[in-house]
Amino acid sequence: MKNSQFNTSFYYNNKWVLYNSLNNNFILLEPMVYELYEAASNENKLPEIANYHEELYDILIENGLIIKNNIDEVQLVKDLRDKIDLNEDHYHLTINPTMNCNFKCWYCYESHIKNSKLDDVNLKRITSFIDQKTSSGIKAFTVSWFGGEPLLYYKKNVLPILKYTHEKCKERDIKLSCTFTTNGYLINEEMIKDFKRYGVSGFQITLDGNEEEHNKVRYVHKNKGSYTEILANIFKLCESGFHVSLRINYTKDKLDTVHDIYNDVLLLKTSARKNMKIDFQRVWQTEDTQESRDKVLSLMSKFSTEGFKVSSVISNVDYVRNSCYADKKNHATINYDGNVFKCTARDFEGKNREGVLKSNGNIEWNQKYYDRLDAKFKNKPCLSCRLLPICNGGCSQQALEHSKEYCMYDFDEERKTEVIRNKFILMLNNIEVD
Ligand code: SF4
Ligand code: SF4
Image (tube, rainbow, N blue to C red; front, side):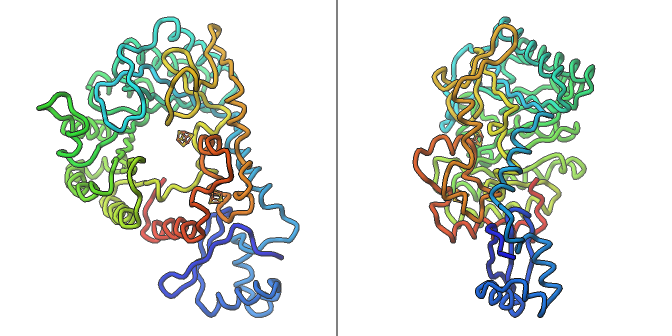
């Protein structure tokens, strides 16, 4: 028997916490019991634990902390990744119907293109694509609307595709999931009726801090912000049964203003709170500190206690089981101009495209797509790392953008342990991070 490569242990509140990142389970040991395990490990006599403490031995095996010598653990992670990322039962289509937006947030990485929208030719190509995919034997189909602001030319660009997809999925008995990443300002009653009718399930909507901070970033004009209108629309959606992921973009300095958002969302009916997930996202151009991470954890606990779901980047280190859509074979991001991409966090410039949507509704992928699918397990340090089953070098975009060996945590073993400690604290606080 040997110790799994994927074990992490740390001391917490007078106990030892053991975690295996492949099994994704924690166990707690009294210090004396841990010492027994540690001594057997150091002397390479793991099976002897059974002679002193049979129950401990069984628990260590059950939780994958000690395994048979001949197990190739990296292969297990490769198999897991293939099962998830090469799954053929599900197709995920992201559509950017426009690159235009009604706001101009300073951090927005996309360049707005005025009057950009789907023309009739590309609209037709998208419906042909949907027709093909929904007749290819898949069991589930996801459509994510992105942009730009996807609701900007709603009637011309979005509604016809919503109707078509709903009809095809119903006809072919395919589970449809349809979500919008929107700023939430343009949502109205008529749209909400359509969303119900055509199987829309969820929304991701962002606030940039409390009312004052948000309105400095997202405003209609100098004297008119958008916080009140957006929050009212979020409430309407949650009360109508839609899931809303309320993304709070924070910088270290603005975290304290989140308490105001907390007070504002408490006005939502208790029964609708389960439909709202508060998702903390640090603006990526800003500094990440332990102090702000602790504040986020404590805020998450506060929202969770009031019946909201919560999530954050610090809790979501799970790039294998919960890999990004862009890492998956069965995913495409179709832009309004017919160019096809994968990652939605980079420019949608023609030179970055990974494919083109053809007139028959097929995607002609280029080499970039195949390179992306083959990007995992190429970074040598990951192959011997204890976090491989939950990190794996991050997403495919990160893997592609590194030409040299790299580590998401700068090869700092303490930081890696901190990732696991944060997971543990969230679990202890019963924070549902879905
Ligand atoms: S940067 Fe990575 S996680 Fe983000 S959309 Fe791109 S591939 Fe996905
Ligand atoms: S990026 Fe770093 S932490 Fe992640 S799997 Fe690779 S070596 Fe481990």
